[in-house]
Image (tube, rainbow, N blue to C red; front, top):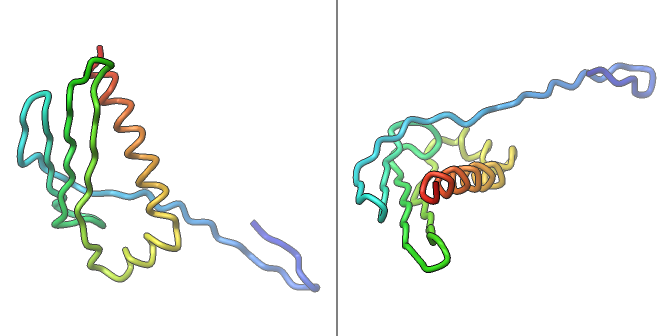
Amino acid sequence: MELEILGGTLTLIILRIQPEWDSEVIHLERDRQIISQFQSGIFEGGIEIWDLKKMNSGTEVTHTLVYKINRWIYKVGWYVLGGEKKHDELTELALKRLKSLLEG
């Protein structure tokens, strides 16, 4: 995208950065809990916990993310590019998929 400003041209480059990581399930209790550990990417070394509790009205799901961002480039990207918002959107999507699986 190019904009003409004060007789000059300003070229804007828009980068779309997709988060990528590998994770491994390290603990699984069917219909109760899933714990995975991040093997790479922004949350490397961290864990993600999904607790599932059957209720009369459905299934209550608690999601916990335990992490420390170690690389400075990831820290910058997390704050500048809205990583928390993107993570929340992806978590919401995962919850919807999990709900669909559990409730058939």
